[in-house]
Length: 388
Image 1 (tube, rainbow, N blue to C red):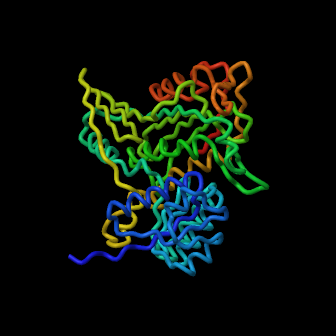
Image 2: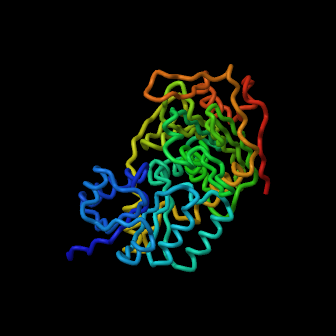
Image 3: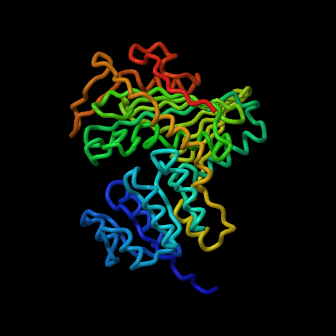
């Protein structure tokens, strides 16, 4: 068999999460994936680790210059949220397929512009929802289709992570809703825990043009930021499925996020980061572990053979973008009062903690409830509602 010619890949944004993409590209190349790193675009100089991984590839501060010089077949865009549409379209217009980090865009209008522009170019675009690459997702969907837990009553998601002051100091856009009129929408629901909502929607099959019936969001913040760090949502899909997502970046203890599919004869707990599925029914518990498909590897396979479906095509993320739009249009996050938060100075950087929030997000996922329905002293009703 002839050895396939490696597909040239460029990476836009090599610092922060972009460093993970650089390591992943290196890993895939070392494992024999038919790709090569052809260039990097970043306005900041590369650090020693980045330079070691990049080798002698071309580095440019402007994407247009890199695209002209390298002509990549795949471009990975890992840049601030408000630059996604512009850079993704620039790459596609130059003839490159695109792996675009989540969330795709900060506004639904930008998303529609991105989708329309991609259609004109004929290039493919994969959105960086790594959780959708987990084989646990189709496995769980098959269990639901077979009626293993009976009728689905709803899907809950819980996420409890810790983020200190350095997280919000890492970039000017971090924790911002907008900058000088430019929409950012960098909150807990839309960025770090975007996978929770996207994966829940994928389990239900509500991802694309069919849209959502109703969305309620409640946004709170313990940190001195614009965006939310402790939030919840409840939505109803076109199929009539209720999905509740409750998350915080002010956890007492960091925990692995998970989804619960509630059924009339049992439930399924999916840990979407690790691919672990726990089936609970008839007093018995069965746990399975599942591998994952890498999104870049999948995109490269699709470029080589269009019959290979994308894991997370841009069209399949429109329902998620309705959630982002609801968060964007919601009132400013309500501040968690000083008596209901604590400042932990035990680490290298101070971080805010909301006492009891770990149990609260778990309870919200279990009961499909909003924070304001759980008798919390700081969670007054602040829901922003989008109805079709």
